Every structure is written in C-alpha cells, then in structure tokens.
Amino acid sequence: MIDKRVIERQALESVLRPLAEMVLEIGIDKPLADYSRAEVLSMVECIVDGYQAYMEKKLHEIYEEYFEVPYVRS
Image (cartoon, rainbow, N blue to C red; front, side):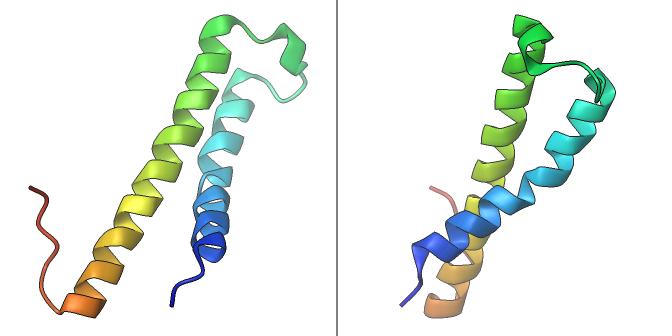
C-alpha cells in the first residue's frame, strides 16, 4: 500500500526549487506583504502547477508498476 502522505510530502518538496527561483526573481529582500497581486498569483500558480505535475507523474509510475502497461489518459 502506498502512503499518500509520503507522496504528498514529496510533491510539496518538488515545488521548493521553482518557488525559490521565483522569490529570487521577485527579490529575496522584498517582504511578502509588499508583493503585488500578480506576484502572489504567480507564486500560487507555481506551487499548484508543480504539485499537480509531480502527483500526475507519480500516478503514471504507480499505474505502470501495478498494471505493467503504459498509463494512457482518456
């Protein structure tokens, strides 16, 4: 059985590098309270997209491991 908490933690950790790169681009010394709406939305998008991409990748891996056939999206 797969521990979803482990996969979820891995998905969260997979977002750290892209998020850090975004913060560096915005300015590491800029307080979060001073971020523009567009900057905050970009950060949210970065986090959500990265999390979803990791989870989808893991879904493909798990599917192929258990069913021994390629995962095909319908």
